[in-house]
Length: 337
Ligand code: ADE
Ligand code: ZN
Image (tube, rainbow, N blue to C red):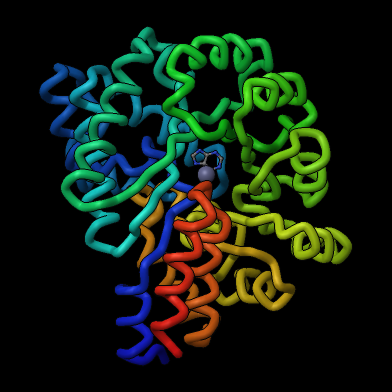
């Protein structure tokens, strides 16, 4: 049983979020409001109807609904409202820094200009920094179910906004689309001086984690939970301090794990891996950052030390400057000493 003290620790400890898709924070209420003002008819009759459809047997079933939901996002104001609502949650949950993913191709493929997407997201981030002190980084992700040529074309278009981005990532359907497919575009990303991250080892095998590191030269692995199948990989991840941005409620909802008590997070920590907790697509998976912490804390009976390690890892694995990381890690350490 989780103590009141631990609940309080989770809710109040400063943390960063390193794995959240802004399109995955689209709450049904906001989706209906934006659909109405944009004169778009949703295929669901009500918010409750839509929520009831959020039952997934695998990643692809989720992605089909997630891309359909994003169709109502058209204008800068839509992306602003979406992002500001997520950042308000961050403020309420003591997420002091967030590194936000977005999927440019989901929008450009239906003729929504990149300016609408990027200006809306950026303005919300600037306002949240001014109002709530939240810092941020932006990470466009390439869709791995599309071709590498399409990713390269998108990358070239995004370079016009290059100063706004810290890194580039890779998401969408992992099965059938291994890291090797995107080797060239990740070389271009590096040549332009950006960092990179990639979803790997979510539904796909541990080999995809090796390949994301060796072929794509990523600075972090998104998910990476299938690394648990490969003891040599676990040792390597610990040795090179490669962070894993783990998303517990996502893994449960997409049946990557059958039960939260089977989630490998605690084992990853026990292997000294820089694992972090994140929400992925919180509007679809039943909770934001703190709900993810509470879910693993309850199921895996984490200690106070584990919670502090997870929060400290989130700063360690972030793309913040070193002195800022150290400031936050020092503050976290003082909470249980
Ligand atoms: N896009 C949004 N959420 C994702 C996930 N969990 N895996 C892959 N692509 C995604
Ligand atoms: Zn993700």
